Length: 148
Image (cartoon, rainbow, N blue to C red; front, side, top):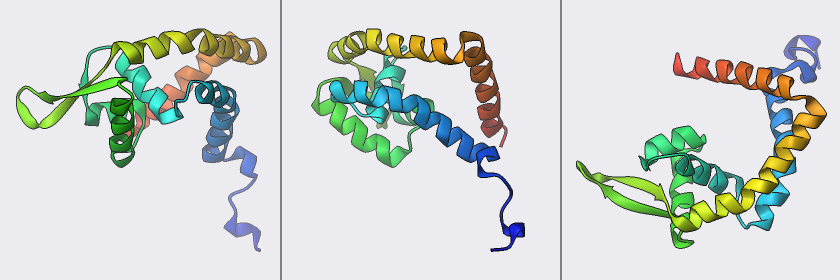
């Protein structure tokens, strides 16, 4: 295959590097989440709702980085497990507000010590300053999405 078709070293590809980094991090969290019978996407939904006030599905999808069709399935599963509630939005009967339940908050509290231990290990191995710098850089890169 001619070299001109390939952009260069795959390890220098931003998209591939981001995916590899995600896998390096999530590989540490997946076993913990599995022990608590929660998927990565369900965990992101619970974390977003656990941070504050109820929100509608489109805001939740954006904040949890989940596509709307997947979110519908996740909402249903978490509702069945009584970890979130869904209620009609006051001003618009077609919209719903989603909120975390005490059971959902209890799961977050239960998982928190394990999650903190994983973050601490990542900081120990990679460095707290590097992680902070990386988070700033990644958030800046993600902000480019908002500019489109």
